[in-house]
Image (cartoon, rainbow, N blue to C red):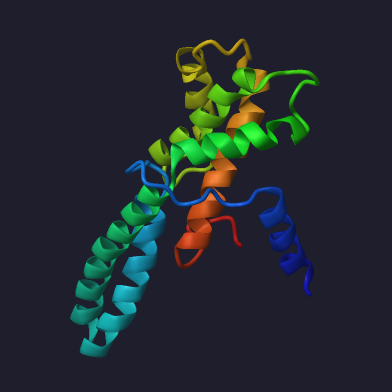
Length: 176
């Protein structure tokens, strides 16, 4: 195995994907990643008909890819995501020893939701807005943004990894 393959396998174990559920649409999985994959596939198929076919194929593929992204979004069950983090939060290196899930839960929910709202952007690009809005989103959590951002980033990455596995190409543009 190559070192990249080993790292991907390690990440799957450390951060397994959420499971499918029936609670309905979720912002994760919609948008750019799915549309970009569909656009590429459509453009390739349209190339058979020449340059105009390539453009038409890209547009049709983007629309179809966006639909696929919506299906991916519907497969993320917020209840299952919460159960995952409830079970795993205490093993994360940023969690204060003895802290309860109730302190970190809002940050995990915030990360998953924020990933969908900031599609196509990295966590670092979105962080100034996330920091600004944390006090409004945190509910009863006493975490400051400096403490919450690690859990938020973790949940953001968990959602990103799920979408990446479910869509063709490099939907989160991280080179993997």
